[in-house]
Length: 430
Image (cartoon, rainbow, N blue to C red; front, side, top):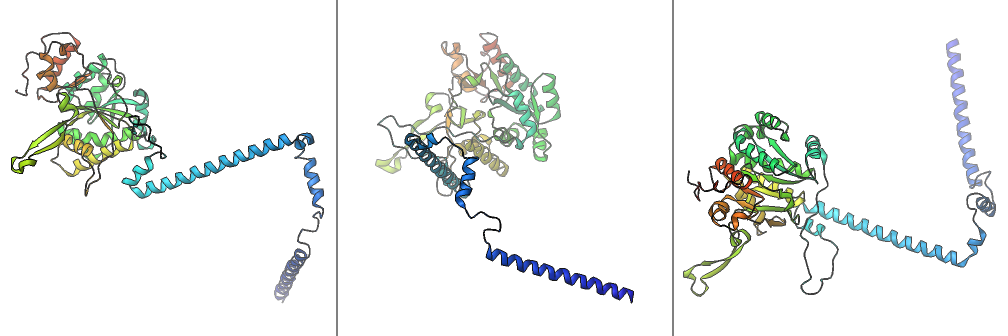
């Protein structure tokens, strides 16, 4: 019985509380309807305004009464309004450009986004197109360890990079010895095996070994020159993502001057040429003869000898990264393709049905300063005037006996041995 009475009293007490809450809510609604401004609100707006004016808005009455002061304030307000409108317009345009970039997916819309505001053309002969793409925003998350190394090695965010395994150890030694003798501080070897890492460290050469990668490690340990050459396009991408300009260098190159003193930096890619004359290196009009066409037998063609994929300077731009991606992708699928052929096809082929060409600016380097071995052994060594010219680099790309010719180049240019080049044939006889 006592338990039932206790439950009854609790129930009664709960009912009273509920009734009280309902009554409170009803009274609140009535007061809200009758006194919308609140019970204690002032009905005298001027009084409230006077309180404000006496506190935080106290100003000199003489300055407020001055017409000049008022006009000046109005002028400032108008200028700020115009500036605000201009900023809103810029924000709107940037949003539109971002939308276009998202929709373009690397095609023509991206080129529209990259263009500046429309401008009037100047007088005849004064119009110049834009040649240089802006650098990418550095992304250290792409490879924090490499970013730390490059911060110590690079000069003005530029660095020479060679990709090497133990198969080219002797040539690499001539390579970095010539770099040191030329006084070039900013260079780095990307080692593809542990033995190469130890070799570089023992010779005080800056070295970097990528994190373990099954495909990269397999090529690095067992691959020949062509396989390693194909691999370098994948490796270089991270350097550009980090915001560094890269001079990619094969190891069959002798350095005699600092190459960074000779780049124009007005293009995405500056490359040495396999050409051996002004025509072959820089382009010429070649006439194709087809007698069966009669009157129209002569067809004019434009020709240029290929860029050398073993020595090129690349700025960290979107077209540069796209070039690396294209070449690396094709080489991964076309196992028999030569990296230099693919490099040039992607760089030079124009857009056409079924293909979107690369929009990259390019520059051919002076073939007497950035000299290939055909120029040296066929022409320069036989010309008394040209022999006095000191090239920036010599690339032994035309001849298979690379190491002996590299050492001869060092003897001739660095050590002054006049007959050091005489023993070699012009061509690639063994």
